[in-house]
Length: 300
Image 1 (cartoon, rainbow, N blue to C red):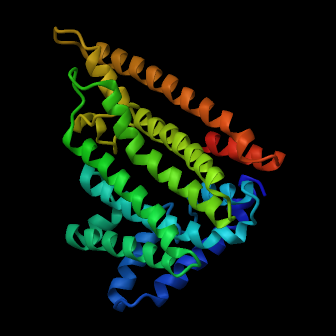
Image 2 (spheres, rainbow, N blue to C red):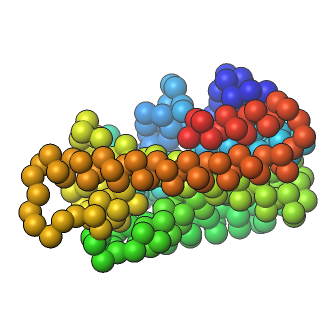
């Protein structure tokens, strides 16, 4: 099962799982509608064209670990729900545009994220071995919110270490992608040693994804992104700040510095990508699964 077929075959099954749990949740109908609206935002799991960016690593890891994709559908559904919650919170915290926020307001949006996190936990706890599965996602969420705290409280300046910027990056998407791959392999019944390898692969891939996102935030057309305006401690912005000259600079020199910072961050991302690729032979002997794992890094 390649990445394309995952989109075609699995998306509907994951969405059905999410819809079923949402329909059966012990909540009022107006609140159910609110959570459904969040899950149906552009690209999310209940939207007409979900991007399945969290389903893919979960399903691919399950199959690579020797399972079949149906085993991972329930955990992929829970991962998708929790990530919608975290994405909403990220938009709120960064002051970025979001249709739910604009339509329903801040209090209702924050309450929706709370409900989605609880719903994801309920979905996992109802599975066999659910307590262990829920613990994996909970720990990843704690690490990610810890990384987000650093993102919110630190600023990109010449005094901030590059290592600190990388720790923030790792705590965010690195932890979350590690959990997706870990949960997928766990659904297949992988042993502890292989689970650690899958989690490590996911962690590296998540760092690549976060760095790519941070680089895109510096693009001239990234008008919806607030990283530069808020001086977020992303790796490229910290690198640019540390290479700033003492004198004031023109717009062109700022663009040059940020361009150099982007090249630097891409180099770091490529090193993480290569490390992740080096783990694939230990994860599976199946050629198709190896190709799918490598494909995940390209999708990121």
